[in-house]
Image (cartoon, rainbow, N blue to C red; front, side):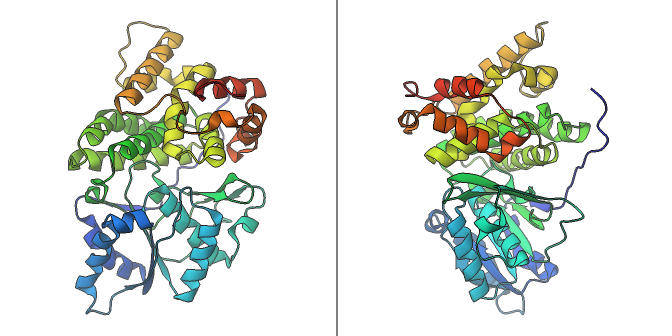
Length: 403
């Protein structure tokens, strides 16, 4: 294989980490020139008191002429639905917002990124702007959007706060759409572990599995470089060490902090090495068809897809094994791959994650519909899979086989 002519490793977001780092938000917005901020979140985080923990840091600044929160859009749905993005666009224009503050998990942060994109482009219907389900805008076509934008992740999984990708669920077509634009990522990411301590163990586990999947898919990507490998390798190490601790004790601030860093590193590698992502391909398709949370879908598919597509993982399996603390005993690459997959299964099981989709009505849909969904997902463009392979993987994640 010849040396690639070029690669692009784009780091745009400034990252502030640590307990109570949310207290920096008003001053950071002031520095970005914001005046009227729209906060984007969801009702669950509002009810859990997480939104208030962020808004109350503005109360100290209320007497000064600093930026203010002029509206709260708290209707974000699972998977960032397109109608939800359109509603946010209308609301942002109503309150004349000039800045965006996202507080939440991947769906909230992706909604905010699509909102920024829509405001910048003058869009009212997000689906119409992504007619083929995937919109790629690299530099120099992509230009700064000049809408001050801060993200505060409340889960350690997607890393969406620093990624150039927004995944939006097209409710009309029942497919997950992707917008790639290097200025979609936040101007500033606030990694405050205090805001993740209330996350239930099960959600902590599957969001962490999403971060792990990002790192593994980045390492084996045909577009991987030493830069992406460095981020992916360290992400796997951090997640292997800290995810079980965060699941076992949600108040472990050190583990929560490390998981936020691991998540950020995982997506940084993933989005810079973006190419063959068969695990995410399956997870997107199943998420769209069966409304399975993205991280949970990745957790189930990760060992199954690695076993089903060994040739993709064998060239870099030593690096994955070393990062994941799998002992080498002189095995060849195939033997090592088997050991990594075995440890992954144990790791997911110990986190309380399932190995199949027993809670979802996966077996109620005919297999041809699943094949079509996997093949039509935008991820399939770089790494198409045969119908036989898709059927084989599908048969191994359904609880009682597929009709």
